[in-house]
Structure formats: C-alpha cells, structure tokens
Length: 285
Image (cartoon, rainbow, N blue to C red; front, side, top):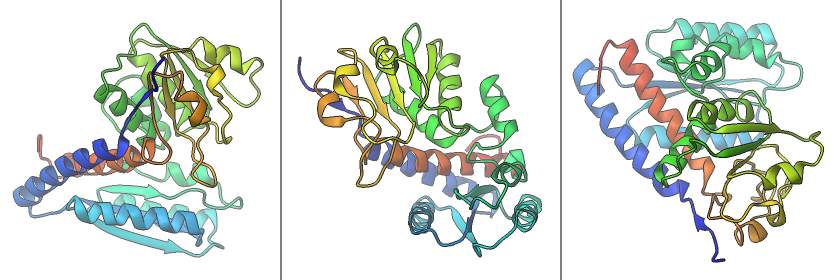
C-alpha cells in the first residue's frame, strides 16, 4: 500500500484567512468598523504568549483589529470574570478569546461562561456546545471546526463511516464527536482509560486523536485506508499519532505541525468576522 496523502492544513488555512480578510475589508467598508478580537492571557506561560502573538499576527493579515488584555498570574477567578464581562459588554469588541490554561487556582469554566455567546468565537461556552450539538446557529469550537473543514477539503464524507475520537475534552474531543455525528458518522468516544483502545481504533474509518499523549496511536492500530486526524501537540512537535508508522497504512493523514493547528486559527478568525457581521447588523459579507 502506498503512503498516505498529507492533509495540508497550512495551505488550506492560508486560503481561508485570505477569504476572511476579503470579508473583513467589505465589512469595514460598509460599516466603518473593523472586526475586533480581544485576547485575554493570564500569566506569562511561554507557549501561550507565543500562541497569542501568532493569533495577533494572523489578525493583522486578515484585517481584524486585535485587542490584547494581559493579566498577572495571580489574577483571581473574580477578577478574570469581571474582565471578560467588561469585554462582553463592550460594543467595540466582537469576539473574545481566553487563552488557556489559566492556572489551577482559577475556575476556568466560570471564566468561559462570562463570555457572551454572541462573542464566543472560540466556541468554549455551554451555549456554543449546545447550539453546535443541535445544529443551530452559533459558533463551533475552533479545532473541531477546523477538522471538519479539512475533511471537506479532502473529499471525506463522514456519512455512514465509523469515527473513533480518542479524547474527551470539552473543547476538542466532545465537540468534534458531535460534529461528526451531525454529519451521519457512527461515533465512538475513547480516552486514556478505554480498555482495548487498539481494537477500537482498528475499526475506524476516521480516527481523531486528541488525548494529549505522544505517539499513543500506532500504525499497527490504523485500519488500512483510514483517515487519520492528529489533533495532539506534545513537546518536540510530536502528535498523538506515531506518524512514521501510521503514514504507511492511512489513506490521508494530518502532519504535526502543519495539519490541524493552522486550521484552528483560521476558524477563529473566520468566526470573528462572522460575529462582527452579526453584531453590526450586516446579513452577508
């Protein structure tokens, strides 16, 4: 069997950001207001600082105004909630991103829920999960949304296929399973405590690895011809899938980096422009 074809998230994300930039320009011209994304960062975790800076750079390329709020590591839950509530009430801000992790001393869920659903462009609130699960208008979690765009771009129709999601986080594993289910896939959730994980993965036509354990999924566990989405990112640019062995059995596979990661940011920016359009009363841009 020939090697899997790589799913190039970098190239697809670049096209999405270009299209998003065009839409942002039209919206700005029509309303006199540029879409604005507020990013909130607690502390100075190096990876988070780098990630926020990357998002700010992408915002500039897409014609989106970026407002950054940096809070000290000692910030309390109440202080963080108050900051986010103020951004939610600010008509000049159209989307809010709380960079996580925020520190063990903070109630992250309470902070997420302070984001107004209309500005939840990262898709992290209860309201966003509910609308996404029921197929109602709203914002999807960005990484799952990016994964679905990748599948579409490479002609992968989930309908009727067996999809195994390895991971159950509130902003990745659970929502990507719901999006696959909405597209008529038969979805199985697995996680770090799943017995016979390898056996479950071998049944999958589509594998989404999102558990945060380097090289957990081995090539021998991949069904020949399966589509493999590696949403993990671990130290040393290593995903949750053992790429070298999996590429010999899959038909399509995402690299790490350059697969799912760029799609997450592209989805965030796309949803920020959509949020701005709704809040500014512009039906289509």
